[in-house]
Amino acid sequence: MVRAQCAAPKSGRSSLSTDVMTALYKLEGDKQFDYIFMDPPYHQELERKVLEYLSGSNLLSEEGVIIVEAAKETTFDYLQDLGFTIIKTKEYKTNKHVFIEPSGRKEVC
Image (cartoon, rainbow, N blue to C red; front, top):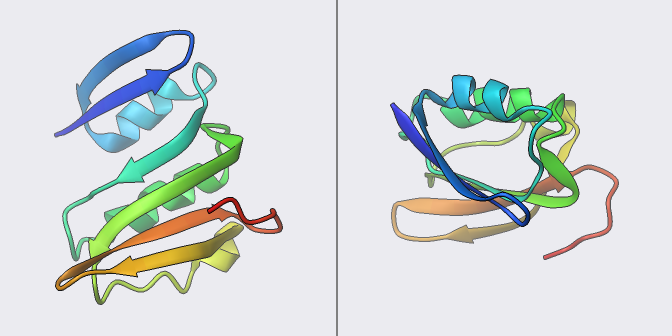
C-alpha cells in the first residue's frame, strides 16, 4: 500500500491509503500539483509505471516538476519517449534523486 499525502493550495491536505495507481486515478481531474515526489521500492520499475501514467495525465501543473528517488543504477533512458526530460540528478551513496519535467519546457531548477 502507498500512503499519498496531497497538498493543494485551495484544498489543504488530504491522505489516501491505497495503491499508487488507484490514487492517481482518484486524483485525476480533481487536482494539479507543482511537485510530484516518488519514492517507490527500488528495482521494481514502479517509477516507470507511474511516469507512463503521468505522461498522459493532467496531474502535473504546467510548471510542475517530478522528483523520483531511485536506486543509483536505475536508468531513465525511456523518458524522452514519454515526453519528459531530466533537468537534474543528485547522486548519493546508494540512491539518487532525479528531477524531471515535460520536454521542451524552459528549465525551472
